Image (cartoon, rainbow, N blue to C red; front, top):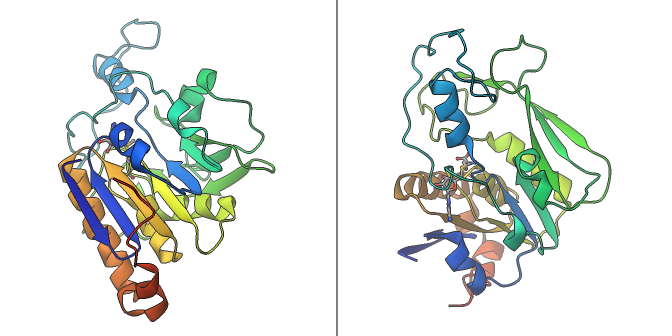
Length: 251
Ligand SMILES: C[S@@+](CC[C@H](N)C(=O)[O-])C[C@H]1O[C@@H](n2cnc3c(N)ncnc32)[C@H](O)[C@@H]1O
């Protein structure tokens, strides 16, 4: 680990989550959006080729204001969820891309990104595999390039923070589905810009986040710190008491 930040209810690691995993104890839920091979598909689309490798005619040009992102670390190959499946509650976005490595599940979480708006080349929805009990659930929130419903729709002031950024409201929906005890600890091993952490600390939950890319790690630290300050968490005596010892982590 090259850096560890303790920010109120959150313990954030800059590093590889596979190195952090053996040091972690007492995590009640893993809620995450791991990399699962988007780079390979993006490269194919950029080359104008379909899944069959056949060249397609270009349909639309890049949206105004869209930016080029560096490749997401870990997105150049298939994802192996195995290390994360043993936790009591697990929500993993992109599960439909690695379903061959997942146990059967009844409760998938579907994020409808269109809400009835017309189709384009991108997916209509994203799907999270869970080990939770109960029926499948849908979260509806338009999120198409620069068109985003929710608190991230701030007139473009904050811009996009991550190429595969998830809405805070979506991650909050996932935490809600987990039905966690108020003293629970949530972990996001592929934290990105930190929406799971923001949602968790707003709920007063402990949070452990890991991110390997220093730029996204800094973004997540800033957002999670802002969220705790806005929620007044730094000044609540009960929360301050919870912070000692700082986290259920060894090493
Ligand atoms: C799909 S993105 C998550 C984006 C996040 N949901 C958001 O809204 O910003 C996956 C993240 O995992 C990070 N990552 C990839 N491999 C990692 C690893 N071994 N350990 C920790 N983070 C990793 C990437 O840098 C990337 O930011």
